[in-house]
Amino acid sequence: MMTVMLDPLSATDKAKLRNLIPATEDIDWPSQLALAAGCRVANGEYHRRQRELGRREMQALMASFGLAPGMDAARAKELVMTATEVFLQTEAMKVVSRVKDGELRLYCTRCPLYERFLDHRWGGLTACGCFDRHQGWFDALDAGLEEELLMNRKWGDPVCQVAVRVKGSRAA
Image 1 (cartoon, rainbow, N blue to C red):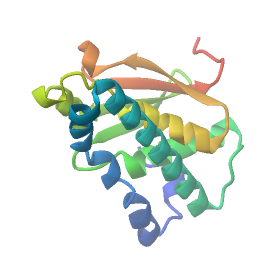
Image 2: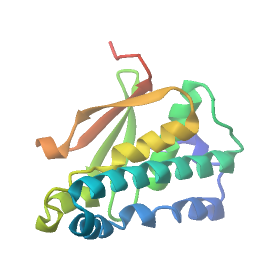
Image 3: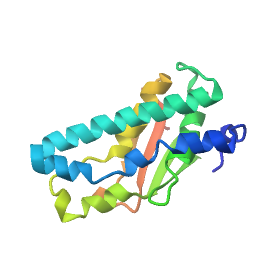
Image 4: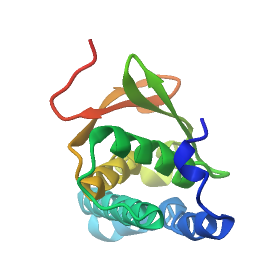
């Protein structure tokens, strides 16, 4: 789903924003850290870095549109849809956004991290950075958004799916 917000961005601006992506797809370091410091340390550090990256991504995206934190929830959700398109559409990862039952849903159908969870070297590493990355986006937006995990490939579901909503609200 192409978002309206992407239209005013130049190709140069889109390329600059996408330059933030490689850090998320560098997924070798957690297994090295786990060997050196243990899985709990590696998982914690991985989550921290993903949340920080998400915050930086959203700050850069907001800056490209001249927007400041604290906007209304509708604009914030539109930015989440735009961030999904800019940062989560790569050769290795595919996440799409849709509005379903009045809420924003993010569906991850291809993820390099999930494939890593199947790698024996990752053993006790169970961190999924996507959710922390989204939390970083929400931190930067400061618009009262949260997400609820509805489906997860690690649970045997065909995709990972989250519902993004204003804190305290639930779909009817």
